[in-house]
Amino acid sequence: MGVLLDTFSEKIPLLTHSEKHVLYYIEHHWEKSKNMPLTQMAAENNVSTTTVIRLCHKLNMEGFSELKYFLKNYQAAELPGDLDPIERYKKDVQDSLSQLRADDLRNIAQSIEEASRIVILSVGLTKMIGEYVSKRLMQMNLSTTYIYESHMIDLISNWISKDDLVIFISSSGETETLIKACDKIDHLNIKTVAMTNNPDSRLFKTCRQAVSAPVEKVSYEGYDVSNRSSLVMLADLTFEYYLKFMSEKE
Image (cartoon, rainbow, N blue to C red; front, top):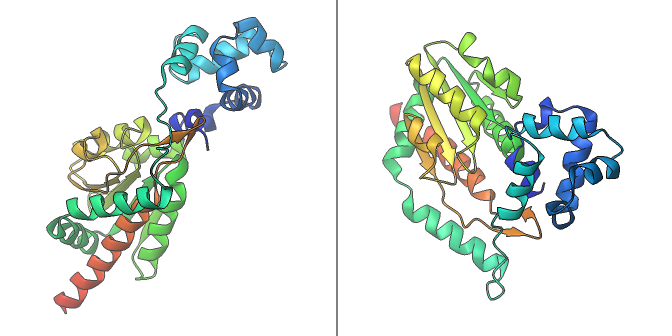
């Protein structure tokens, strides 16, 4: 998935077929789209100018000019020419492990054990990680629900219970859908956990418990190639600490 699709991943389900077509076009013609007039953008995609404007509004932008401003000012870091991707991954893992605290993982393990149900929320590129966490917990016969659709996440405060535990998974920790849901749940006095790659993110700071595996943010030719495997590492560590917690409890 490219930078544009990743940035607005929670908005994609809200788009019509024509609006998605325009978004995908821009993603794959980033440089060309930076200076393209509205009328030409519509013509290139065989849609009306109204469709393009409607897309911009659904992305929370005032119009096509703001979208072009975003394209022109997005600072995409180049892959470091002198650093092999394997070496970068090694550095990410080492840096992440050095910042993790065992007490944080033990406390999350205890919250998992005390919860009557674990609800896991993730969108975009982290959807598969949310599903992975859900299946690992199901192996222990824990009541687990996994949600990745934005409109369902928006409604979570209508059905969540006070004894539930909600786990948010987000690489950036800045996904608006998750942040809004976390804020609602916090006001209901329900326990929340964040797993992110950004300890300075709003999600990390909003959730009552949180663990983070910081990684270098890297994009190449418009595609976000930042390490997300560290989120799987967080998931595995959380699961192992839960097993250890249950073993010591017995």
